[in-house]
Image 1 (spheres, rainbow, N blue to C red):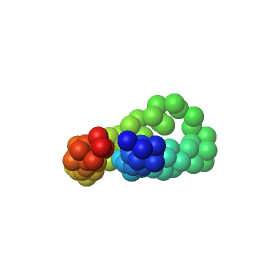
Image 2: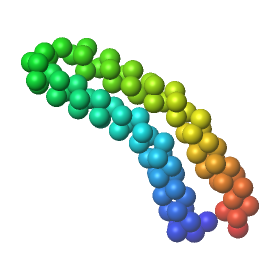
Image 3: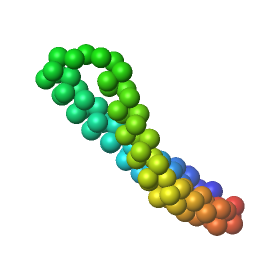
Image 4: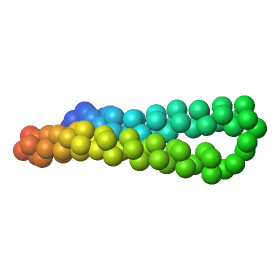
Length: 89
């Protein structure tokens, strides 16, 4: 296996991981920002007010996007397995 091929496999792995992680992280960021603005406006600084909505929002996003995430992971894994013969040359 050439160094370029190893770098390409690593690059695709990082891109796939980023693609899978991006939706829940963005939703957590948006919900956290909204809760932070709400806390700044109302001057309520309760720690559970920040965690519980983010956990619920991220859980809902993962619940609804899990089939899509699983499809991407299966596609990447099957591409790697199908390319094993090429990688061993």
